[in-house]
Length: 496
Image (cartoon, rainbow, N blue to C red; front, side, top):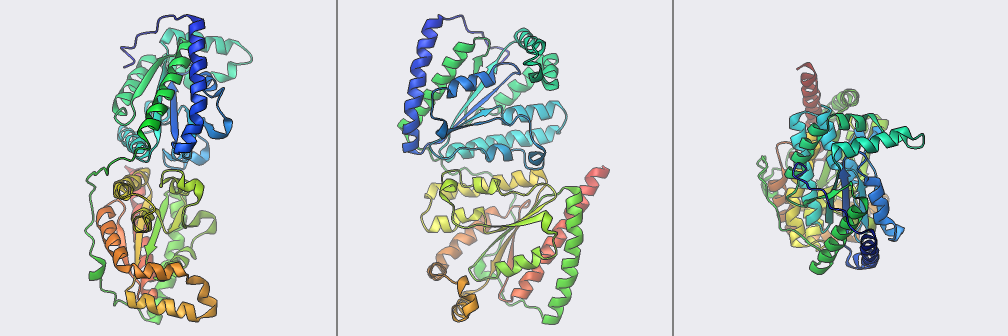
């Protein structure tokens, strides 16, 4: 790629400027069409230090409506994002349907630089490359148009530009140690960039532009973007076929085969609750010190006891180190992005715990059964969810998923109690009764969900909750055991 790149020949300036003017007008006219078609666009601008990435973006956005694009410039990662998964800052910045996001450096620069600086191991780098390919494929399958550009300049041109910047009092601040290091190790960086582009061209191909010819680069970049948008508008919003990868799965029983008779006496409940909550308080301190992120996911039948279960888990935790995320129907700005976006933005920092009351699994349950997404969408979601959760566990997170399970008669009794008790009536809605009528359909969907997404790294646990107290104790035991194991493994890694 870069090794074989041939410089562009000089072109007539007037002709170039006329071409740029026409392309800018075309891009401006496409904005309204993008909004009408609800097509989101991501333009990733990568390249060498001093290759003109910022200047190129300035030229690209100069004539378009600023209300419908955003420029994301995350090469300098703040401390808060260093405590999040690698892709978090990019996933959080994806545009809404009908809008454009320009990334001034992104996942390529971050992954390659971290590897060359030995901030991550070779294995971690491979994981990041895999995660990037998955991320781009998920976005494409969700209807995103992706344009990836690399601005190339040779070593001599880079040296000249860095020298000019460093010698001016107004621009010397722009030359960083990273830039100087890249110039000194130009060949090593070029090999790394080449390797990265070769491994990440399947979903969206890389386009290498000659950064030494600035106006030519502007024309070529505009043409790439305009042509890609034209194809997207012509073809319509793309929704990919379900993609299946084999994940190591944990065998799960059918819900109908689960014995819901387990119970616990009040005396044993009080004794176990006190012991487990005390241990959870200790483990929360250790998790914080060792910077282990923890994600607890709750799904289950209406009236199964999720709220009471969550309260018993949350009570012993330091309120400064956890939060509960109640997930309701997506808001308009959430519906206008990839379905996982609203969960990427709610993840915990390292050392913190996030409890999700309902989760991304709504995609394969309520959204599937109520027709809020297409069959392609929910079938594709199984694999996308497994990839998402593997990204979280690769990051070091403990991911535990609980299905709070009751039988149909128990649900009816609890619904009736809520309806007949004034202080509980807020808990019961017409939607709850409508969902109950679809119990059998939901059971089929849940069985399939459990079978396809209970991976060894992020397993499902069915919690028998006809006796709510038994369910709380079982959940606490699972959490305590998992955190003890995670803290022990973390200690072993440090020692080794």
